[in-house]
Image (cartoon, rainbow, N blue to C red; front, side):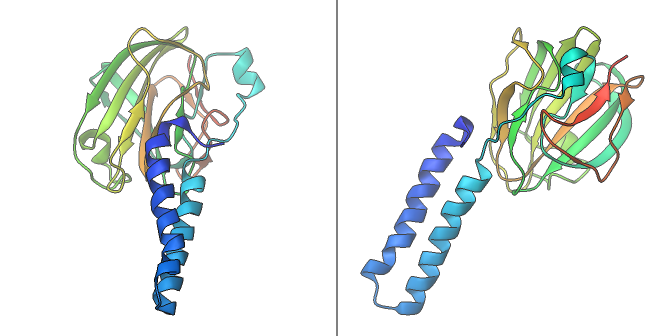
Length: 219
């Protein structure tokens, strides 16, 4: 299944891929024809791969206990640090940063059940997504979620390749853990910030999956 969040990109990329695949019909140069056909085929295959939206299931223990925090994105944990969070939590917090390569699923999911209390969009810069400064300076959506067990702050952050965020969330929305809410296109980063007293179950280098990997537990 392909995600609805990438419909515009999917249409454009498939059209371009189709044109490249069929262009050899109008060319006499064999080598150029092979190159264009190959590029077109790769573009189509990449489109279906990048915009895939696989089914995901919330872990049973997270269904039974909504103090668990799920990963909102697929990718690799690249940083876990303690820092001041001044937008929503307004306190020291633990940041878990997840880097998404262009090969990861880019559909994002809500990390916990609750209500969206804060939303802010920052047009920002385009540093590489794994750069420490990207967490603050890059284009990003900042989202504050209030749960029964405390508050969570998370950010969609685009990198040097990505140029567009999709986020359906708005202040006042009631959400459930695992709900889809948007995507980050063509390589990006997701930061999740939890209170210092929250348990963290992942470490730097771990691979995580949106909706299926439990990354923390609120106290």
